[in-house]
Image (tube, rainbow, N blue to C red):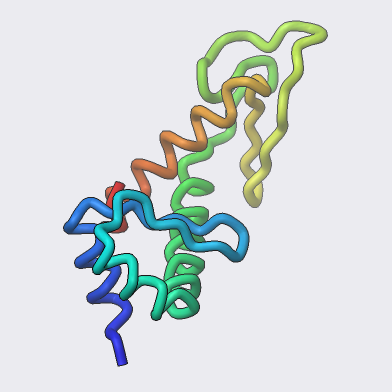
Length: 121
């Protein structure tokens, strides 16, 4: 039996980027020998990546703070009448984002969370 945590750690040390896209596990920059090992443990890796994603989500949610509803939490600029925006809520905290700002903010927060939690790039 392959130790999945060790396999994932070794893959990341070798620069492999593991991501979960729905039910599919992707492994970017994986050497051929590593790719074969990753395929054998795909179900276990999927479960581990789901667990990691849940921790990342909690960390990103914890980064939100109440912010004036007339301003974007990401860029801090005013949200003008007619501009597309998205409201996010987390427990008692709410913040608005320009529709274009949210994906960039979220990606940056997820990257920071991955590094802080030791999940690689």
